[in-house]
Length: 336
Image 1: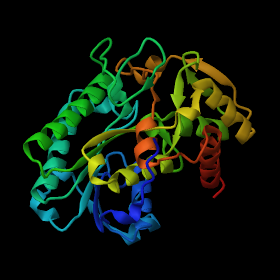
Image 2 (image 1 turned 90 degrees about the vertical axis):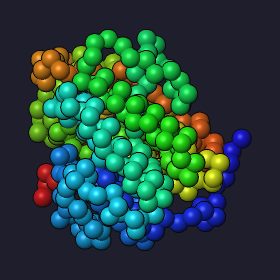
Image 3 (image 1 turned 120 degrees about the vertical axis):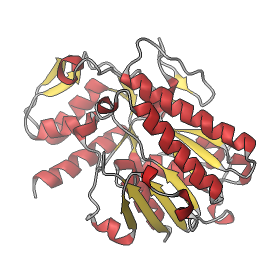
């Protein structure tokens, strides 16, 4: 059953607080909420920002450069909603947080919960598809599927289990505070304009290698599958959860485009084709490049039936279109 959502029926959140708002996903969230003429404040400690605050879009928002844990939750009483994006990110970006990441994720999530509860505003929590863990065979993952910890206690497991614990804490807060409203978002393989290769994100890395006619380094044999989802499709899904009617709050939502399922090798070949690069695809062992803390992500293909059915979400860009956008973005930087 398809539920058509009339967004005009629901509350408009005019004053929006976004933690991690200078990050890749944060930038696109700022852009989307500005379309609603919202008053936006961004908090970011610049630890993994994708854009600088001198980007023209941030002329339209207030930016607080600080760790959110240094800020008093009582100072945010004027806001209508909080989007909590602040977190370590990326398969390589998380490695430097080994042993401390769990505390960081839980402490900052608790701060966001306190802001939400004390100031009577909904919390939108950005979790991760990595909470699902390992599957021996490819599975389209539903929100209710089991979460499976597999193998050693890797840094990646520290990240995924911390995010899962944060979800549990949010849910349990709602059991003791009936006025506490939240949405939990599990994005799948987000990519698009402004994503940087620094955190280990595969598409911008491939594009930069191709534009420099360097070897495109594919981890192992490149057969790993990913459902690459355009960042603006992810953000639109987040936006729709904030406009949901009352019965669709305090829910968990997969946001990812299962129709974009492609192998890593396919991605590399498509990048070479779009860039007309002389690059060669070579197989590498990522542990030799990034060190023994690195662990490859398990395959994660979403089942997005829930958000499609109840909130009328539909992704707009195919995997090939997303690749082309990222190529055009980095070509524009290169040609400046």
